[in-house]
Length: 142
Length: 320
Image 1 (spheres, rainbow over the protein chains, first blue to last red):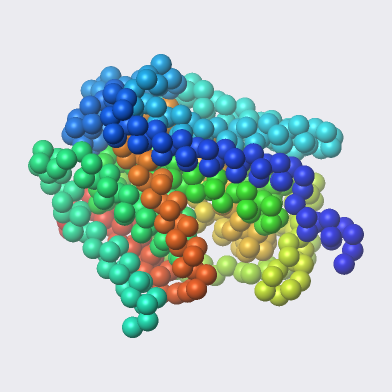
Image 2 (image 1 turned 180 degrees about the vertical axis):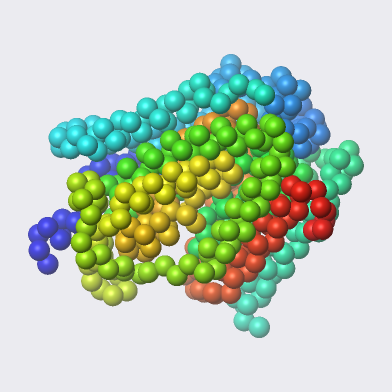
């Protein structure tokens, strides 16, 4: 087996770092989701939307649901973290932020290797994910 | 009947009995006044547990089963089902990612350019899907139904190739360094691979991204054929890279749905936890039994779910 082939068989350093970040983040996200859900359904923290009201509204479109429950768009949930239902968004957000965090590691890794094409691709992905996460796109109601 | 047979039989009966729930869902406006708030989340949790087992055994993603079945048989609006469907697919992909990267089965160099294209278009798909749904949710139901039936046909007839032969790498694949090697445990050999038809493959990921975002489906069903059959990537690397890709593509679309308010914790958490637990159980069962029959049952369920979505969208009422 050639040395090039042996090298190809091994995961790259970036892959290992990416995997390490991911495994911590994803399980932290799942644990947080479960814990906050328990806090929510047991009523330890009061909910912003009354639990008994939700089954009457989950058959309606999101715009109507938001309007009737006075729920916020975008990152507005951060100001409602003292409410049991919106506390769950910490777990959702952590899961959805993991890829962005891992990509920061990739940009650094590829830049160090002077692999500018892949550093640029990773940087562009960060911009795309940040735009999606920012709440600038598609938040307006209809 | 062997214990595995019993188990699979029970799973079949369970999953195929959901048309009865569809009937209940149709009358949800009456039911919600008498059923407590926890009724549907508890049902959803166990449903997703079984779905997770079946998805692993059939070799399909959770999202592609979740969206059509839950939108067809539960009383939730399609906006919430798509938002949660993406979170379900995302959580599964994130959990699988570390193992696939460490074993060098998911390839970062292959995933990164593809993911950039797919994630841009999954955002556009998500925005378009939410816009169409706000005009008339039936449009989305019908389009979803047609897509699901097409996926079922694709799963039924596509014959993936274990190790495609790529004689000459194209210029784009060469420039991006889209090549690698993995260790095949079964054949006890290292397998080198490289891509061809890279430009066409990248173009197809525009469509994959759009569909993933618009319907909240995840997109493993599309990623694998494009990577394997078109670009010539070995099946194992295609499947692993596809799973990893979902963690990027679904992230961008999931943010659009989440920011819009489509992820309700009461629906989202039981779905994610149920499906993840089901996947873990499915992996354990898969280690002792590899029933091909499950794949065909899942394809049949997808056909039914697709037709149900079309029926619901057109308001025909043939399927309950």
